[in-house]
Length: 108
Length: 108
DNA sequence: TAAAATAATATCGACCATCGATATAACAGA
DNA sequence: TCTGTTATATCGATGGTCGATATTATTTTA
Image (cartoon, each protein chain N blue to C red):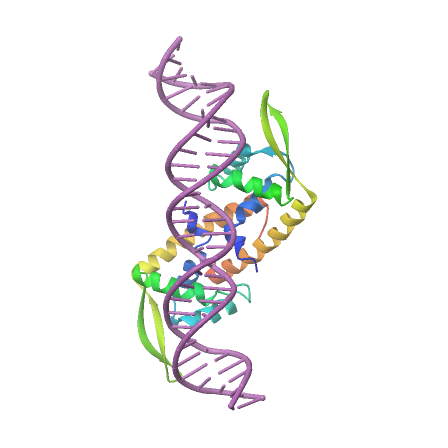
């Protein structure tokens, strides 16, 4: 199983955010904070290099757009990105399930 | 929230193993594999340095014991270790819950 | 109005967890 | 005898994340 899953959950979370809606970088940080009820606070020093690398590997595409009259760099998930999202989702479910089992924990 | 939670889940899993029973290193790898239904395969290059560092920081204590007539280095969880286990367990639950929520996933 | 805070993008060195490789020794089974 | 497994150990490399720093534009506050 993928070792970088744990650490690399940020990739999965970003792909999930972009699944239904294009967003620009800063917006993703806020959206992630909101959806996680303040548990996640992705750092800009993590986000931007990650976005660039995801684009380079073809999971995302960027384009210039506008928000409130201002230029923004929007990101869009690609077909490969959607495929990778599903893959990582499955891996996460397996991993988290195993942790829960070993730890004898339950969610909600 | 602790950034090393994700990566550092190995510490939590080891503490959990030792919660009810003392074990030696190699045994922990096997037990972890078993309890996780082959999802976890902790590497020896990860385990031994981690055990040493956990002992150094007072979460574990080691002693020489025997298994099938052979000398083994057993590890025992300390009071601090149990406290740390509970702390990490809580953090994990919070983190995993947030991931599940963002990902719209469910675990049995 | 000037200053401070926030939004937005970007980079870089440092840290830390993990891995693969390598080493050694004892013992089991083929 | 040789191979495989158990068991402990170390070390260099990798890779994800962070904090610091930088820059520009806009908004809020004093």
